[in-house]
Length: 251
Image (cartoon, rainbow, N blue to C red):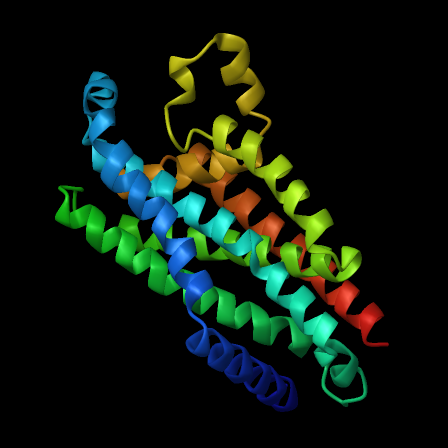
């Protein structure tokens, strides 16, 4: 275990140095939810007001989940660059654990997501979001786990296709139904009944509902159970897939 942690730490530090030298992806990943919060949030006041809740307390959790999904989905692009530059080939000859090669990169992505989430929550509080420390903490934890699942899956997919031209349209294809059917932007109950029913089959919707419930301090067992369950399951499956792909590529 100590060897695994040391190897993971080495990969993590290298990835972190790369981000600090070129923070463009961090800034770009942060800008989208912030712009949604600043420009789209005020438009929600008459809509969300019908629910009798604070618009930013309702909207910020959705932006957190969006940050966790869409920001982490792009993690694989840097891995394709590393593969093209021969970094993955060089790692193949090292005795490092193949799991550590993934977990070190995943640690970088989770730290990046944590910083972005804290900034987004702070901005939401400044704009009038209700203060619920325990719920906010739980919401951030769920967001980070979901982001970790997306980052691990993105890395695995990147090493599988090894092409930005393939990866970009696939990500866009996945992002569109997730954004529209997860209730991130608007309550699904405001739409047609068939659309609301269809959204029930979207795992991310249950995560959004759980994070939103946590922010409101409403810890309904059913809502939290589905949200936490899907988050943990997606994280476990993505880490398993990512580890399997890294082992295959570095065999």
